[in-house]
Length: 226
Image (tube, rainbow, N blue to C red; front, side, top):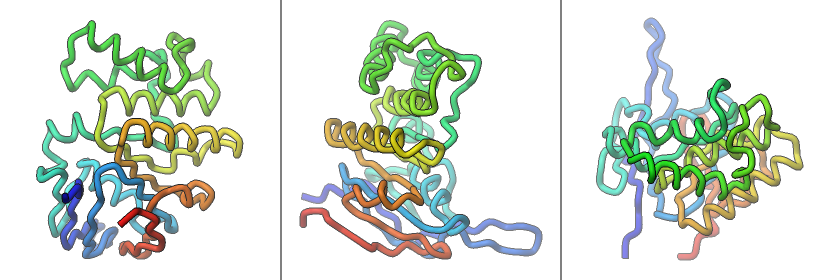
């Protein structure tokens, strides 16, 4: 049975600056299975974040095709419900409580208030922050803020988590806690996890490791069962 969820065929993303063309992703073919954990390493400016944005439907390829479960990931209804994003800088709204930051992810889905409240509580409980629901981001530690960001990504019940340097702003101990949490959520929920990181101690926990270099992706390690 084919459980491939992503198919990328000859995908390129080229940015234009004046008369210059800057290729961020070059002629990429890639398949990602449902429920796998793919980690991507590479130097700054070599296309990692661009690839993540393409996979999450935040940008379209200049050339080639991306299919997500047979659909266009840029389609509004696909993008809104299928992908959860986690960022290095947390991207929380400073004037909103943890609960309200999580709720913001549900607004595009037009979910009824009662269901919304249940989902928010469940998401905060899954990251062990139900007791901090009314706290502002400034009243939370960096690790707690990232947990709120993870809850915000999870509250939509996405098929895919896309994490861009999720531990980049955290100390070593907090980094380990957050990665352990992501791994636990990945296993429990059967999520597809695509994670970009410079940190080898984070990356080596993944099933498959790829390296981006000058816009090209090469698979360095694959521990998936065949």
